[in-house]
Amino acid sequence: MKRFDRILNIVLIAAVGLWIINYFAEDSLMPGDDAENVSAGEAVAADTPLPSAYAGLNQNDLRMLTESSEPDKPVMLVIYTSWCPYCKKLLPGVINIARNHSDKVDVVAISIDDSPADLKNFFGNLKPEPPFVTYNQSNPIQQRALHGFLQNHGLQFSGGIPYMAFFRNGEAVDEQRGMVPESVLLDKIDKLTNKESTS
Image (tube, rainbow, N blue to C red):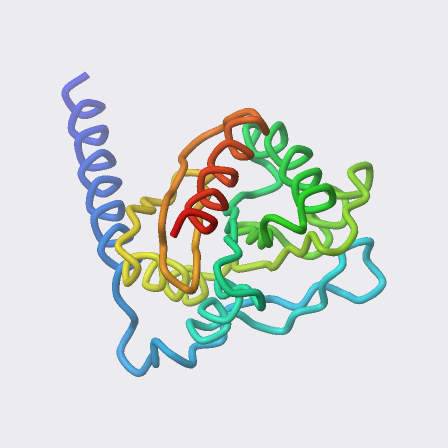
């Protein structure tokens, strides 16, 4: 029994050590990585039902995506994965917002742990259409670029999903963690668009 306890302790210590290493590695680039130019997205094949075949998201790409082409128009950035049950509940509402409220908000979705095939299967029944666009940000270097971008905007993204960040004129103005009804997201968007008209 003592031998089993000793083995269990070693395994637990190793697991905690790996978690600590991974935790700190997420927030910093590896030697030789360039925070501005690290390639950060996997291409989604053009024949998938997804409206995106984007080759990579580095911090400059993320900056452009969170700046709407229309002044003061909010951008909602959604971070998710196809295997997350809460994301599966959230995404139909997000797609609906992208379709039916494109006059109020631009929607950008980023998967942080999927292959193009996973995304094709995931969106098969949802049939997203532009202006809904999704990108794949699944390898560790890509994820560090995303984490760094969000931290540079003062956002507290810890890796928990689903996660939504709201931007206006390239600046982060709000964030939302976890599964929420579509109505909550629309309320946030309405508040942001009302701020526009009163300022």
